[in-house]
Length: 55
Image (cartoon, rainbow, N blue to C red; front, side, top):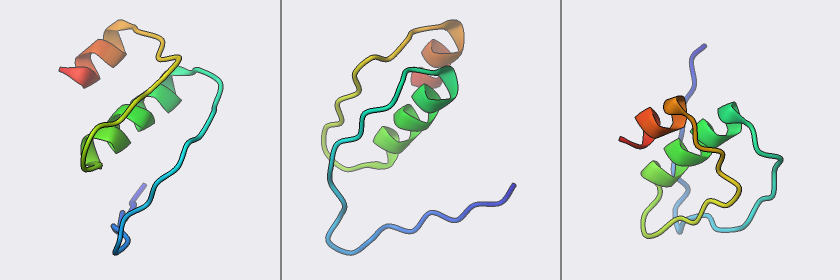
């Protein structure tokens, strides 16, 4: 799978609510790493995989 992520001029903001899952948690952590400023992730289910992603 190939993907291109482009940052919009002026930035993007908002809030989403999704059921907790490991794959969504990985995506949320990766998106927060790419974002400027602070990110707040709720309902993050910690597992060895998520801990490794956060490291």
